[in-house]
Image (cartoon, rainbow, N blue to C red; front, side, top):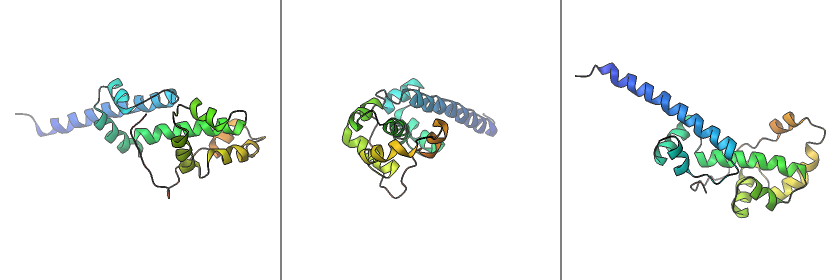
Length: 154
């Protein structure tokens, strides 16, 4: 018969293992945000089921893998739009989005204005600001009032 604390120890060890795998998933999203990513592929990469990955990722980071990916994409898009040398469509595809409509909707939810308005306003907003400061000041924060629809990663 197993000792009662063995179950808790295994659970704690499993949680630590899951956290390490979740960090690998988050790091992969950070590195490969412009690539086509989906939950199934991310889960396979860390030997987890897609459902378990999604639940554990949300518990650990407060948002789904899809929301995290879109935040990274929009964060990069804001930097590209501030430069002003790419169109909104070019930026959309450069950050890994395949639909201009979805990109514009997510951008507006996170930043509070459409990407075209951000591009017009943002080109001069960070002028003269060191890039490290501009990145912090302009980092997207999900608009808490906006409804959140989270389809599967595409």
